[in-house]
Structure formats: C-alpha cells, structure tokens
Image (cartoon, rainbow, N blue to C red; front, top):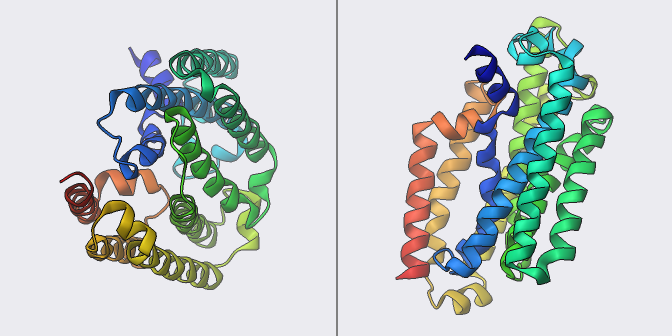
Length: 298
C-alpha cells in the first residue's frame, strides 16, 4: 500500500489541476456543454496530465541531490528513497505511453487536429525536459518557460476542439501564469535567504526587491489587460453583453489576495496548493465563474 502511495505521489496528480486550462477555449467560446467539442478536450486533458506526470518523474530523478537539501522537497518519493531511480524511469515511460494513447484518441475523435496536437504535446514534453535539465537554471527564462507551458495547454484545448483562439485568451493565460511563476520564485528566494538552501541555480540571480517589483508590474499589466478585454467592442459584440466588465471585480480581488499571500504571508511556493486551499481565492474564482456563466450562457 505504501509503495503504491509513493508511486502516486511521484506522479503528483494534484498538479493535474493545471491542465484544466485546456478547457478555457470551450468555456469562452460557449461550447463547454457541447459533447462534440468536450470529448476531445477531456482526452487532451488526460494526455497532458500523464505527459506532465512523466516530466515530474524525470525532474525528481534529475534533481534528486538538490531535492534532498530542500526543507520540503526532501520528502518527495525519490529524494526520500521511498522510490528508487529505476522505478522512477519505468513510471516515467509508462506515463508517456499512456499520454500517447490519449493523444491518439484525440486524433481519432477529431482527425483534423492531428498535426497541431502532436506538435503541441511534443513541444511541451521537449521544452519541459530541457527546462528540467538546464533552462530552469536561467533566471527570467525559467519563469517564461512555465508561462509558455500554460499557453500550450490552451492551444491544445482549442486545437483538439477545433476552436480558433483569440489573442485575448493567449495574452491573459500568459500574463496570469507569469505572475504566478514569479510569485513562486519569490518563495524560493525567501527560502534561500533564510536557510541558505539554493533550490535552483537561478535563485541567486533574483532578490526579493526585484521580484516584488516584477510581481507588482505583471499584476498591474494583467489587470489592465483583463479590463481592456472586458470592454473591447469585439467582446461586447461576441457575448452580446456590455456587462462583462463586472467580472473584473473578482479578478482584481483574486490578484490582490495572491499578492498578500506572496508578500505578507510568504507562502506562494506552491501555486497549486494555494489555489486548492485558500478560501478567499476559491470565492473569487467561484464568483467569477458564476458571473461569466450568467453572461455567456443565459
């Protein structure tokens, strides 16, 4: 039982929540309840999830020595010795195979998506392997790679469902995830300055004042971009509503709360944990979803 539990921990299924970004094109294009579009997106979600889990296995194997020095990462299955490296590689390849199976299912459901989804998932895997091996050691490049990964998820969802993406959804996805990535780096720097543990080599190229400024600038740009989106004539015409701007209230509240978590509470090390456990952010997301659903679907 413990061995199975450790294998599951190595896959980090809690991180699969990130892959919900593949459904964003459906939501904003009013096809969330269209089974013809929804099915390929569900399959794409699992393809990305298992591909991501294979990358997590590779990352934990590659970073095993560094993880053992980290106050939290030392508890990971490979770093703690609960799962050996050979088993980690085996699990990594199994996840890749399952990801390919789901990807083939996407292509079977929507054959016209084949070139795009193959390219996107392949690029995602190659980019993240490069990230694990080298790119995460390069300051600024590391956070941009993370944000690009989320943009690829959105493109994958759009291509799988046959939906053309607008520039707004690409910009907002990139800016929001760039904001979260910089907030995570700030937590890494705080750990480095308080304990002397260098989580990754890029940490020494950052400091708290710089990251506070970067986070604040990106948060401001994200908010302005979102407001411009809600009041743009094309969006008003597309949704046949001039009330989309109301949703900006919940976006602003969520961003400010995350800034508080990052700068005041210094616990932005895991954006997934914050998004899963912070009730204020839950309220912001729920109200935003409810408001947008009423505008889009009623």
